[in-house]
Length: 161
Ligand code: INI
Image (cartoon, rainbow, N blue to C red):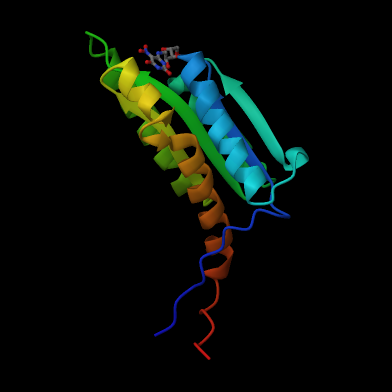
């Protein structure tokens, strides 16, 4: 059996982060977790480009434009959609999830999904540096792992020594 190695070294890779301004305070915490993780893994500040968008619904278009440039090893998407009393929540959630999936499918660039979809603000805070961790940090780690794995998949992994 051969396995591809898991790589989490960010040195030499460039990343784009698309982050929503809607629910700004929580999104800023997701961004902080994301950037901290990239730096911890060796990314240079100059290799992290951040694009703010108005709301989660706008995330896919910005992610697509960035992915299409070919400049980035991965794109990381961050946002917070909180359930309200209307079907708007479902439309925004479907828009962002379907849209991000289509960007991955159409470009082949890894796009990490760090968009929280929660019943209330407290659930979101718990996942943005609270007792359930920071999903921005997790999205950064996932993006990094996929950025390292995808090029390796062109060839078989090395045989175990
Ligand atoms: N955008 C969010 O990112 N989160 C939300 O919770 C949200 N709610 O609840 O409405 C939201 N709406 C705005 C939407 O993403 C678009 O920016 C807007 O519809 C304009 O296209």
